[in-house]
Length: 262
Image 1: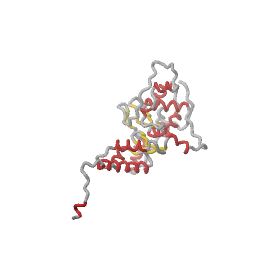
Image 2: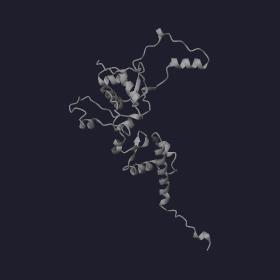
Image 3: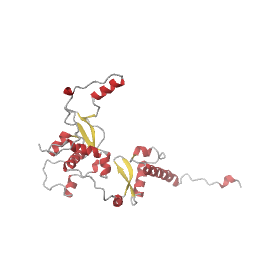
Image 4: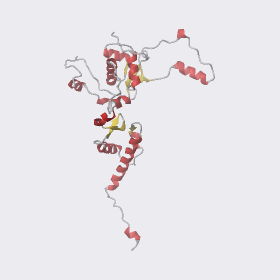
C-alpha cells in the first residue's frame, strides 16, 4: 500500500475551517490589547487580523469572554482596552491618597462643556449666568478632560472648548452621548422637579471634526514671523511693549480666581 493512500484530506465543508481564522484573530487582538500602554483603535486592530474576519465578531467574543473575569474589555471612545473589573477596583485604591476635588464652578463649567460642546467661554458664562474665572478653565485643561477645539467664526474669534478622550476614560464612558439625559437627571434627584419650561439639555456630541462655524487653531502670527526671520539668519523683530497687543478675553490666566456675578 502506498503512503499516498494513508493521507487524510480535510473535507471542504469542514466547519472548523471557518472557526480557525476567528480563533487566530481573537488571540492576536488579545495579545495586542494586553501589550498596549494606551487604548487601541479599531483600525490598528483590524490591520493585524486575518483577512475575511470581522473585527466586530472578534471584539464581541473578547467582551463576552472577559465579561466575568478580573479584567474586562471596555470601549473608550473609538478605541478598546482592558480595564480592571469595577467590583475589584477597591483592591488598587490607596487610602492615603486623597483625590483633588473640583470646585463647584469647575464642575458646572465641565458639565456645560460636555453637553454644549463646542462652546466658548462667553457662551459658558451666558449659560451659567455668572462670569467664569480664567483659572477655572485652566484647572480643567490641566486635568486633560477639556481641550481647545478651534476658534469660532465670530468677531474676536474666541476659542471653542470640548471634552477629550481622557474625560471618557475617567468617567468610564464609551462615548459622550452616554451622559444622562434630562429624565435620568430628574430621576436621580440631581434636578428639582420644578424646572423652567425653557430648560433644554442638548444631546451631547464630541465629534472631533470642526463645525462649519469653527476655524482650526493656529499659531501666533508674530511668533511665526520671528521664527521665519531666525531661520533666514536675520535678527527677530523687536516688539514695542507700548504697542504690544492686549491679552484677549479668551486667553487663559494661570491664576485661579473666584467667580463673580455679573
